[in-house]
Amino acid sequence: MRIDVVSIFPSYFDGLTLSLLGKAQDAGILDLRTHDLRTWTTDRHRTVDDTPYGGGAGMVMKPEPWGQALDDLATGDRPTIIFPSPAGEVFTQATARELADRDHLVFGCGRYEGIDERVFDYAAELGEVRLISLGDYVLNGGEVAVMAMVEAIGRLIPGVVGNPESLVEESHEDGLLEYPSYTKPSVWRDRAVPEVLLSGNHGAIAAWRSEQQLERTRERRPDLLD
Ligand code: JEH
Image (cartoon, rainbow, N blue to C red):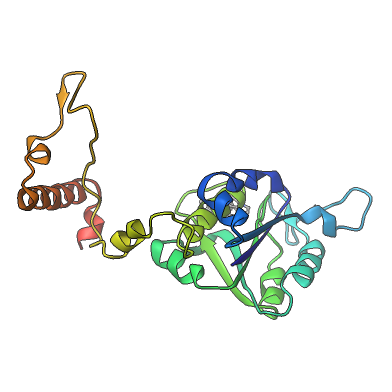
């Protein structure tokens, strides 16, 4: 899979070369390319923003650099073009699964008050456009949202997660929160691991874990039970 990310802060994405996604890039499974939007500016000050028509606070990203960037990156294969936006559909595991199936993703990270609306309309001529929100809170730009989305999508690409059994287990998940996990030592700072997990009784362990899942979901995420 190829992923292009356009941002005025491309070094945000340096962290994606670490760990699993870094190995996937070394192995040639993931071709992740980050780009500085300012390379597509033509003025001496490499300007990417301007004042909003109609007035209002803050600045809006100019369309021209975005148009040039999309012309260069969204070539040939009609990629899926994703703009993180507080006004987008909310990103979920289902979104990650859907996007992990694509051959080419282009992410456009806005800053300031966002990007000139005509860019989304133009991008639709080059690929499938999606406006996606990481969640219902306000960020200063799209970068952190794209970091999260690329990690969630990247780990679903076959061969990226070392132990594919973890992914199989996830895909069989029942929509409940996970059960608690423990490792050695069996007693730590006066806190014992629940007895049943040391019992070797696999039926009792499975029952306890299900009960824990239900109880935690009722307590922390009752919305998942509706
Ligand atoms: C933020 C891309 C580009 C901040 C505020 C406003 C909210 C409400 N989950 C997410 N939150 N924020 C972003 C995101 C994602 N994905 C996100 C971005 C950009 C994504 C620029 N910004 C900064 C930004 C305007 N406010 C939006 N409203 C509280 C009602 C108030 C207005 C726009 C852009």
